[in-house]
Length: 267
Ligand SMILES: Nc1ncnc2c1ncn2[C@@H]1O[C@H](COP(=O)(O)OP(=O)(O)OP(=O)(O)O)[C@@H](O)[C@H]1O
Ligand SMILES: [Mg+2]
Image 1 (cartoon, rainbow, N blue to C red):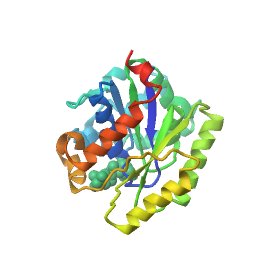
Image 2 (tube, protein in one colour):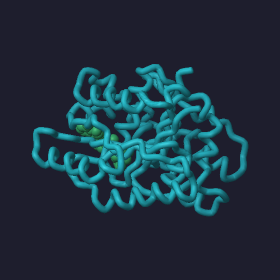
Image 3 (tube, rainbow, N blue to C red):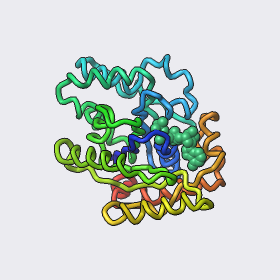
Image 4 (cartoon, rainbow, N blue to C red):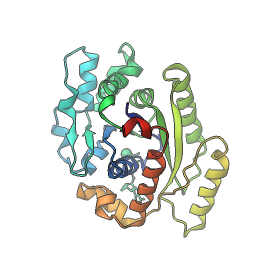
C-alpha cells in the first residue's frame, strides 16, 4: 500500500510545488515508485516538469474527477504521464477550477479524489499531492485521500493566522472525513541563514510549533538555481544536483522515506 502525502499550505509561493517535485525525485533516487498528483488548476507542477501545453490535455485530474462525478467509465492509466526522472505524474490544468464548484453538489464530495487514488495506491510506494494555495474543496479532497501532510512554510514570515486556519482544516478533516490523517511535518523553505530575519523566523517556527508538530531538521535554502529549474522541465535534483537545495531535498527524502512505511514499499 502506497503512502499518500499532501504538500499543503494555503499561502502562495511557499515552495509546495518545488517540494512535491524534489521530494518525489529524492524518493525515486532511493528506489521507491512514486506518483505525483498536480492538484492545482495553475498546473505549475505539470508545466515545471516540461508539459507546457497542459491546457490542451484531455486526460487530467479534472477529467478523472469529472468522470467520477458523472458516474462515467474512466481509465486512470490514461491520465498518468511518465517523466524522464522516473516518477509518474497526473497532470492538471485550468479545468480543475470547474471541478471545485462541481464537487460542491456531488454526493460524498470530499472523498472523490480518495476514490481515484485508492484504485492505484497498490502500485506506488509514495503518492505526493501538490495542493493549490487555498483550502477549498479540491484541497479538502487531497487531505481526505492522504495519510499525512507536509506543510512548507517560508522562513521569512512567521505564519501566524494562516497556520491556524490550516491546522483547523486539518483537524476538521481528521475528525469528520479521515481519522488516519497525520501531520508528517513542517518544512522550513526559502531559508537564508545569512539574514537575521530568516534565522530568527526559522527559530521562532521551531519554538512555536515544534512542541506539538514535527518540524523537519533539514531546512530548504534559497538559491537562484532553484528558481530557474521550472523553465527546464527538470527537478532541481537534476538541474543542479550538487547544489545546496538539491542536497537539502535529498536529506528530506531520507527523513520521509526512512520510516515505518518503508516496510510496505520495499517488499
Ligand atoms: N529553494 C528555493 N530557492 C529559490 N527559489 C525557490 C526555491 N523554492 C522555490 N522557489 C521559487 O519560488 C517560487 C514559488 O515556489 P513554488 O511554486 O514551489 O511555491 P508554491 O507554494 O507551490 O506556490 P503556489 O502557492 O503558487 O502554488 C517559484 O518561482 C520557485 O521557482
Ligand atoms: Mg504550487
